[in-house]
Length: 161
Image (cartoon, rainbow, N blue to C red; front, side, top):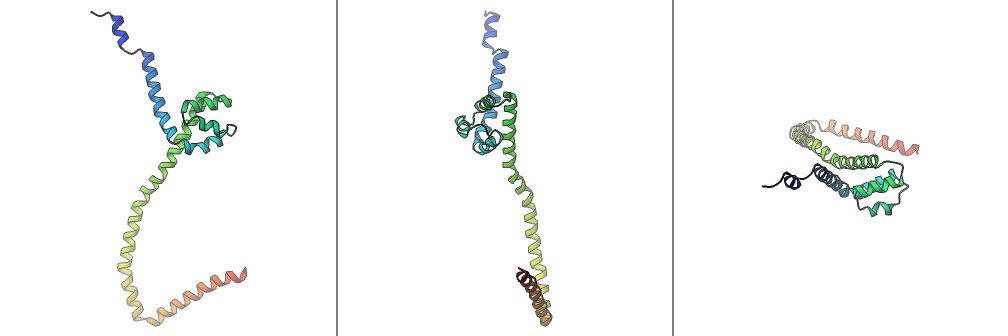
């Protein structure tokens, strides 16, 4: 029979579980930071201009090293610095997702516009051609008048300069 002490030693202690959870959390937060580090670098320099670029680059995007760097150079606590860094990561993530969201919204509108343009060409073009053939002088005078008005508008602005 094994003693209860041996059974407890094979199970991870609550402290070990907390440390594993902290490591898993660090790994999850560290990856996006490293992934976006080059994009974040100008934002980091803008937020903390007193820290040289070489120091930022020396951290290689490690969350803990960045937190340590900023906390050591400023009066901010590590908790505040970590929160600010994660907020910057979230901001960059939202900026990268924005074009996809716009694309998803615009795609149905583009399809609808294409459909409307096709319908317009199919329906309106024959009617316009028929009207031009039936009244060529009216069509010609409308075209000349449109050209004259356009010329006056564009030519008038040149004379004033």
